Image (cartoon, rainbow, N blue to C red; front, side):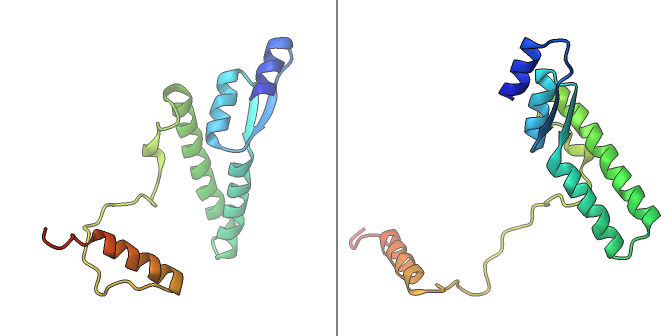
Length: 134
């Protein structure tokens, strides 16, 4: 960020191009005035996703359509985030949205996997017990 800001300030006529590692950094670079930025992790994830779809038997045409849809929704979300901030654009997510489920009582009590954990659990349960006479 600092390099992009300095480049813009010292050389206002030179186009600044930058790589970002995540969405937040990309938004900051855009706000700093870079002309072009690329989110490296997104590009590698999309390339990997396309290869995974093909490996799973999805046709080249369908995999291309899926990736185009992901890119389109990501670009729309990114534009909204430029205007409204990092948490804008959740409506562009498909699937993988957690849905609250009611809490249920476990069928059986948990148990320690090793002696150190057992000692910690025993200590915690002793602290939680009310003192005699209360």
